[in-house]
Image 1: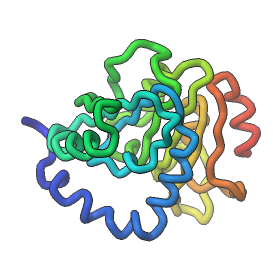
Image 2: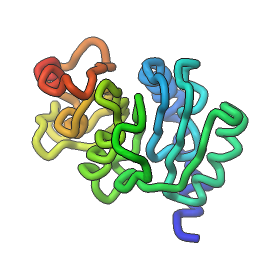
Image 3: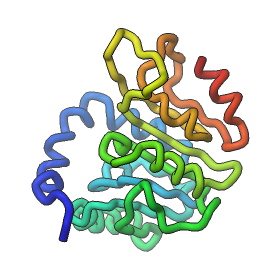
Length: 195
């Protein structure tokens, strides 16, 4: 069994202070717009589970690490019963047909995958044309400016394309509302709203 057993064992304790200091609230705000058939990539131990609204008809949690998935399964069953499925799959290679989901969720995942661009492309691939990609990430884009120099911040976005998903560093000019939801066909509008 591959994976990271020690990381899985300490993950919840390591994240506890961040959750208390606002990450939990950011998750709740972001996930309020999840709907329909929803896929969460890199589900970890299930920190998002309590925040999914009733508008989520089906929830699939993808977690590649078997040790994290082992901890996730009982949390998922307790929170959602039979309306949730846990699969062991990496974000860069999702075992789903194109346009399978109404919502794809990624929270603090892109820093852990080998290829953030491939993971974002996969999320985009499995989204339906009017789907939503909901993100909380803290990775730096190789092209987006950050302010102050070198500082990386959390970003909560609902976006529709790879170009809009990857620049998640703190923008120079911040929006008063952290969540932005755009359909897949509105890529140019997303970029205009963020610039």
